[in-house]
Length: 435
Ligand code: UGA
Image 1 (spheres, rainbow, N blue to C red):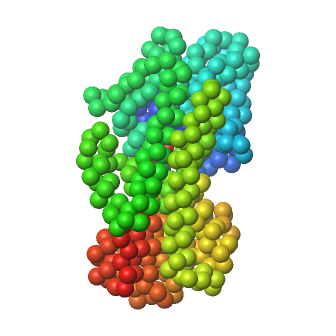
Image 2: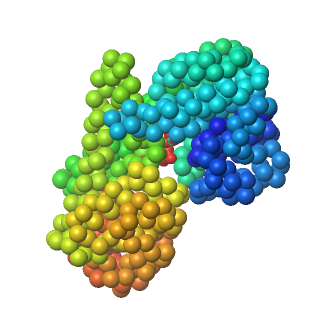
């Protein structure tokens, strides 16, 4: 099938490369010329495990090209994917201008009937608007489909090539048939293929992200109670997770959730629910608990340091989660801001996200080696659970820190090992090891 993908961000680029891999002929369109030039030079604009290889393979096959010429992108396409950003407005409502523009671009440049796929995360009923724009700008028949994406940053390529589920919302049988054909190479016994109506698909995506954020906040609320009572939140989560009705995933307490998706999607879902006449206050509580998780970590550092002025605090991990260089809505960077405001000298190390972090927090001093970053620090804070941090040489680390104090905001280390290595160890929702 001939496919246009409008928007080459995390979702658009991975989608384009995956569709090319499974045999479709794909043109990725972006109005950001520098991004397209980078892609034409064969380079991924961001780090995602396995993406560069997938792009190399897709380009070599001749099935994936990029352009900033809208006509060239849309002209031959039978199916066009809208994969543009849907950021928050200051009031929390979602800004759908890029979706409107993408629909306009497709409508204006279409020279045949097309299926237009809304892949960006959008509030329920957005497809009606997309359809209106397509009809207003184009002269052909457009079927709008909602096909929300469930890939996670850090494992986007694997998630895209081996999806757990595929969700397609359409209001006509022909559009459903086209989408089923398009995804046929990915459909295996293990894949749940949901074919439903458009509104259900749109709503399901927000429901999934909100529920996952709810689990994270539930774990963080438990962590506060565990800290006050002496219980261990990791053990509580393990016990809860052994019930298949609950599941262990997304019950890791820590610094809270961040990233491009959860914060904006919760705000958008909240606003849309209100607009539809439902006061979804549970979502406010999820956000409040998430903010509290960050504040709690800040308070632990402050308590351990007494005065933060002139203290050298090293943050290990700056991206919003492991496996990515993405620092959008990154809890570690929010923590860095709080520490800088309190007068601390903040040092950062991240396997991938150092440069992006520096661009966001100018006062952050970035090192490209964890030991160099830790040298002379009064407190080491684990902010992102990159697996390589678990391999650090604890003896060496203890020798170079000014104070052997570790605040483990992701419960990465084993408390007994940290005690054995001679650290004052302050985890999340489990007893502190005091030396
Ligand atoms: C999330 C969803 O998991 C994807 O299914 C969805 O496609 C994507 O949003 C999106 O809407 O585009 P992502 O934001 O990449 O994916 O990352 P997650 O793995 O969901 O993690 C989100 C945040 O929750 C991270 O900051 C992570 O550190 C935090 N988290 C996650 C916890 O604090 N505890 C947990 O137990 C799990």
